[in-house]
Image (cartoon, rainbow, N blue to C red):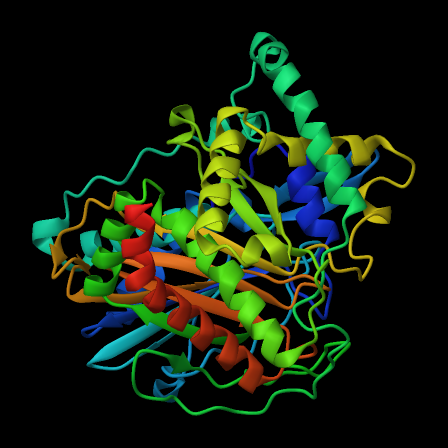
Length: 475
């Protein structure tokens, strides 16, 4: 375990993730890696420890001091726990991570001579999805260096622990802040609208029984069995997940269609998710004309100077609201999303959420009095992780990363859900294809409804690549 460095105060966003964590709604990111080949157990265990040592917040705990909350070195470092061979097709039993008692990272592995599975559970207060991918990339590099002589000289990306002291500042000097202040003040109008509008839940008032077990099904969509555990306020399993896929050909068509329409792939996928949610709610609920569907969208705030920062939260949240009239015009909806996100990037309005958290922090009661109130703050979450591990120095075979004697066949990421938000979708681009990773609240929607939501989203995307894409291009 590395030498204990001086403590770090929590940023407003880290405290928000810490305060928002609940036993029934763990604020955890879950990652599943599927590799082919005979994973060397000893080399993998050592490589995991080396990778964790580079990322200080992943082997730290939170403690309360007279001046507030701070990160301090834990008395033990996270380890890779090995499971039986039969654990490939199911997620391990998971419980919430108590950051006051243990580091915000857990890891499990199962291996045989043909394939291996590695699962990570990471508390969102410790880092964001990009940060988890840094850990994964480092692990693969250390493993390759250990088992493959021809890869022993591979250099890992630089990692500067001192940069963590600037996290939460986003490279802003006093002068830069003053220059962007007018734009940020305009963002307060959006905050006002956010507070005045009450978004609708995915399914209003729905409560379901705890989910049972599911078999691994063939085809492009996988269904994982629910993990079983004790200790929750509710007996539901965590996490409840589904995975859908677009293959390389479909993703190429999507990229071409988006380019023809002068929008990004992210714009297109957000538009289609809005349409899928609307179609889903028409089947399972009674949507009203004034209903506001709100999608919460994490936004990466990393700057070039952050490239050497260890795993951390350098992310914000923006919120997209749409009503029935806007959803009735798919082309207008697409253009509106493109323009709104362009405005957010141009005026750096992703920072508005951080300023709001900092303001709430200094009010009586602080953030602790203003999180997890049970209200629906967003209908769903859509997190786009982009092309994961795109900068890995490791070689590739058929676009898949080769680490020593194994190949990374697949990677899936499940974003956390909070009380009132019934589903989150993480979009993961890897090896030329797209993984659509859904986590859902088993108290709010049934497993059949979750499967229907994912199927509806896939159908909407594929349908939009037909006649509608040609119509959009003509328009």
